[in-house]
Every structure is written in structure tokens, then in C-alpha cells.
Amino acid sequence: MAEKNRNFKKRIAVTGGAGFIGSNLLLMMVPRYPDYLFVNIDCLTYAANLSNLSEIDSAENYEFEKIDITDYAGLEQCFNKYNFDSVIHLAAESHVDRSLIGPALFIQTNVMGTFNLLELARKSAVSNSDFRFLHVSTDEVYGSIETGSRADENYPVNPSSPYAASKAAADQMVRSYHKSYGLNTVITNCTNNYGAFQFPEKLIPLLINNIINGKTMPVYGDGRNIRDWLYVEDHCRALDLVFHNGVAGSVYNIGSGSETENIILIKKICAILEKKTGAGPFDKLIEFVKDRPGHDRRYALDSSKIKNELGWEPSLSLDEGLELTVDWYLSQSDWLKKCTSGEYVNYYEKVYGDRK
Ligand code: NAD
Ligand code: TDX
Image 1: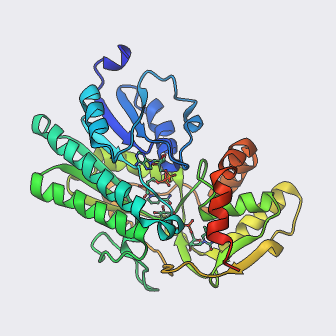
Image 2: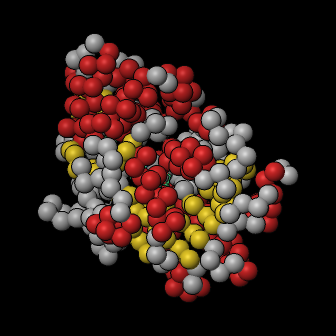
Image 3: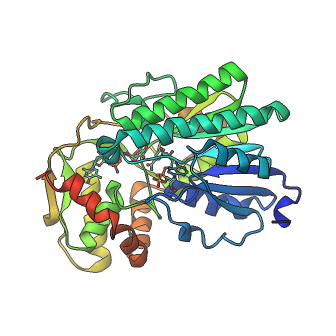
């Protein structure tokens, strides 16, 4: 711990660092910024996996604190211990289907948890007026986007699921702390991510896991809903840029522009797995099932602001990112097995059991 008290240039609380995006972000930023201290604050829900972070576990500029962001006193102690000058806030309940089954937890974590962090940031800003608060949010806050248009940062907020509504509420809280208290905030709204460490409740890893195990692939509705898929490392590079260079009080949309119908995406994944395993054909496992209630038809963001102001561009095409992702899951059978045993079996039955 003595080492951790040394004079770091920045002292950053990263919430949700053991989840999918948080793990990718920490694995990128901890070695890149040896003179910053990163403290991963995570309560380790089903979606977390500390083993993702084994490469940086013993780094001098990394610490882990098991704290629930709904526990204000626990967070306050942690803020006192580390004297943070910034927060990168990723911790959330993140899955739409779970929010439909149990919305209360989403309000607790995503709204109240964000409020707790904002309060502590506001208090920290009394002695450090530059205190930076990066809030990581989603394109789902805009709701379904009509064909032919793309949502820019001024697009009306119109969430459809309890998850999306909880994120929209948190975004508005963050906006209000900038307007009312002058807190140095930035908000990012990003499209669907995919890549290593994503929990197999989300579409892409769920499909890969089901194919590997010879299970059917549940496709909601007619399979023609559109998502704008972004490789997670491209999202993390954008977060790094916004954290350092984003203008206080601003919002940045982050999307790849590669809009794809779910059924097309599914066929791409089948083709990659057929090529890599020599088995298949896998599209015979496709099964159209009852639609998700409130299912947004199309997400599509206008990301020109982050491109023009901060020089961000996605580096990988969807086809390139999918190849890397399939390779990663094929090489991580133990990781996948750990995720898909225990609670996952009940979850799967609850969400998919009566969908046929
Ligand atoms: P995830 O579900 O994989 O991970 C969430 C992490 O937060 C987990 O490590 C979990 O343990 C932690 N967490 C949850 N509740 C907590 C609590 N009460 N206290 C402390 N830690 C808690 O999520 P993700 O996909 O990595 O998403 C990270 C953030 O990015 C979320 O805020 C999400 O809304 C946002 N986002 C995700 C996507 C996407 O496609 N996955 C896209 C845009 C934005
Ligand atoms: O079994 C499935 N079958 C299916 O057809 C699942 C899990 C999903 N789908 C469809 C629903 C969506 O149209 O695939 C699409 C993607 O679904 P998810 O992976 O659940 O993502 P989505 O609901 O679009 O939300 C994601 O992107 C925005 C993340 O889960 C959010 O955390 C992020 O904020």
C-alpha cells in the first residue's frame, strides 16, 4: 500500500472495472499510464470476473476495492483513502432482458449508485475544482431511431426498457451536476460493444456459446432489428480520449457506423465458426422466438462530434472484430464454462424457457 501512496499524476476511481468494458479499459490504460493510479471499484456481480485482470493484478498503479456503489459509506471511505481526482464510471446492471424481469436493481445501481458517486465527486470538487467525472452510457437512451436518420448528441432522449430508462436518468443526473454545481463532467453514449470478456447473456457471446454446445440460437422477433456494433477496444480508445480531452459538460456519441440486422450478424458468426472448426452448417440452429417486449427496432448514432473534435475513428471492421472475438471465445472454454454454470442455468430458463 505504501507504494500506492506515491505521487501519482492522476488518481482515478474506475467503477465496474471487473466487467466486460471495464476489464478491457483497465488492461489498456493501466500499462499505458504508469504514472496514474487506477482503483477498480466493483462489487463483483455475476457479470464480473477478476481473473480478466490477472495481467495487471500486481501492477504498481492498480488496486482493487470490493465495494457496492449503492453503499455510500463504503464509497466515502474509499474516496477518503485514495483522494481521487477523477472517476470513470462504468458500474451498472447492463442487460436489457434482466431489466425486464427485475427493474428495481437497475434503479438502485444505475440511478442511486450514480447519484452516490456524483455526490462524492461534488464534495471532492470543493478542494479540487478540476475533479473529472466520465459517465459511460449507452445509445439506448435515445430509443429506436427511424430509418434514414442517426441520433446526434442533441437527439431527444426516449428510452424503451427499464435498463435504458435507468441509464437515461443517470445521464440527466450527471448533466444536472455540471449545470448546477459546475462539476467537470463528460458523458459518452456508445452503441453495442462486442469482444473479449463479454458475459454470454449478450447476443454475440450467447450465440457463440450456443453453437459450441450444439444449442439452438434464439432470435427475437423477425431478426431484422438493427444494431451498430463496435469492437470493445475501439470503445476503450474513445473513452481514453474523452477522459483526457473531452470538453467539460459535453456529451459524445460513439458508434461504428456498421449497422447490421441481427439475422445477418448471426449468419456471419455461423460462417466464421464453420471456417474455424470445420463443423456445421450452424444456421440450422437458428430458432425464431417470441420478441423482447419494447424491443427497439434500430440503433444508429451520428458520431461526427467525437471524430471531428477528438480525432477518434474505429480501427476494426465488424468482420475483423468478429474473427478476433470468435478466436477469443474458442480459446477460453474454461472462462465460458464458469459463466454458464450456476446462476446462468436459471437465468436462461427464465428468459428463454417460455419463448418458443
Ligand atoms: P457488465 O455487465 O459486463 O459489467 C458491469 C460491471 O459493473 C460488473 O463488473 C459488475 O460487477 C459491476 N457492478 C454492477 N453493479 C455494481 C454495483 N452496485 N456496485 C459496484 N459494481 C457493480 O457491463 P459492461 O457491458 O461492461 O458495461 C459497462 C458500462 O458501459 C455500463 O454502464 C453500460 O451501461 C455501458 N455500456 C455498455 C455497452 C455494451 O454494449 N455492453 C454499450 C454502451 C454502454
Ligand atoms: O438471445 C437473444 N436474441 C436476440 O435476438 C439476445 C440476447 C438478443 N437478441 C437481439 C436483441 C437485440 O436486438 O439481439 C440484439 C442485441 O441484444 P443484446 O446483446 O441484448 O444488446 P442490446 O439489447 O442491443 O443492448 C446492448 O447494447 C447497448 C447492451 O446489452 C447494453 O448494455 C448497451 O447499453
